[in-house]
Structure formats: C-alpha cells, structure tokens
Length: 256
Image (cartoon, rainbow, N blue to C red; front, side, top):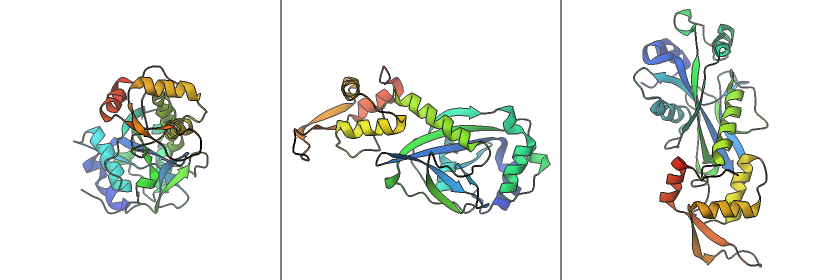
C-alpha cells in the first residue's frame, strides 16, 4: 500500500508496519574523486534525513530496505549492504521521538509510538551519482547529494549513522573489491586507485596497490594501450565479473 501523505502514513502505520523496527539507507555517491551522501529534505525545510522507513509486518528486512529506497528516492536495483543495527537505549528516549515526529508536523500517538526500544537497521550502497537520477517522494521537499564534511541539520542520530556507514565501508573496502559500477568498461589502474583513495580518505602506495589488484585476479589486462598521453601509455583493464563477485564474498586477502 503506497501512502500519499505523512498524515496517511501515521494513521495506517501501526496496521502495516512494525513500529519498533525501521531501515535507514546511506547512499554514498562517487563522482570525479568526490564522495557525497544522498539526503531527503523533510516537511520542515531546515531538517534533512536519510531515506528511511518502517519494515512491514510480513516483509523480509532486505526487501524492506530496497522497497524503502525506491519509494523514498526512486532508486532501484541498487546493491544494498547491511552494516549495523542501531538500538542504543537513548534512541528510545521519548523526548527524541517526540522531537522527530514534531519535525514531521505529527502528533505523538502514545498508543503506537511510545516504545521501550526503537531500533533501526542500517544499509549502505555506493553508486556513481552521475549515472542515477534520484527524486523526492510525495512527503519530501527535496532529494539531493551533500558533501560529507558539509552536512545540514539531520534528524535524530542520522549523522552518527552516516559516520558508521562510512567507517564500515572503508573497513570492507580494504579487503573487498570496488569500482564495478563506478568505472567505464575499460580503465587504467590510476583510475581505480583514485576511487580507493577518495573513499579511504588517504593516499595509497602505487606499487603496493598495483601488486594487490593484479594478484587478486579480478582484473583482465587488455592488449591495447591507452592512447592518451605522450609518455609510455598505461595498460587498460576491465573487471573479470566472475572473479570480482567471488572476491566480494571471500575477500581480497590482506588489506591496504
């Protein structure tokens, strides 16, 4: 059931959803060595939030994450990875919940929203944001990319959720491949290293990076050379799809 307004959502929420379990999606966007995060502007124009929502009573949690992302932003077929469950007791502080609902211009319904524990499950994804076209849902004013170091005022603990997602992505990035959906079909090793450096927030040793990537087996080197540049041209590479996705589950081995 698609709800067309916040008022309609809150009037039906206790019938359709688990009131104590929600999803918050952290969608990181990469483009030209910049990393951003996708946020929705709430009815209160000064407040932004992650694309989130409640889990249906008979819904698989992974399916809920994908549904919520599509309903809130229009983004579909995005690989979402669960990274953390936020269930700290302070999240269930009624004052925090009241403030959050007031930001949404809603009355606080004690029968359904005064909770002993309020838990949200975090998912993250990384996309090339020049290749996607997010848009706000019916109950949001805007859907936009924001610099990680210039975040606006956020709902509840969403700033903490973003930080945790970034930490988890960086941790997994050191042992898992990345770049499959961020690079053209053929690319240079320098292009690939730039992605890793942007996300990790630090420089990597070129020789060590090349050695690790080549030893992982996830890259196929092309016979032709990159035609740009007057000096000796670097090789072009492409991802070996089968080995790439195998490495996603098994890891690349030693981290950076």
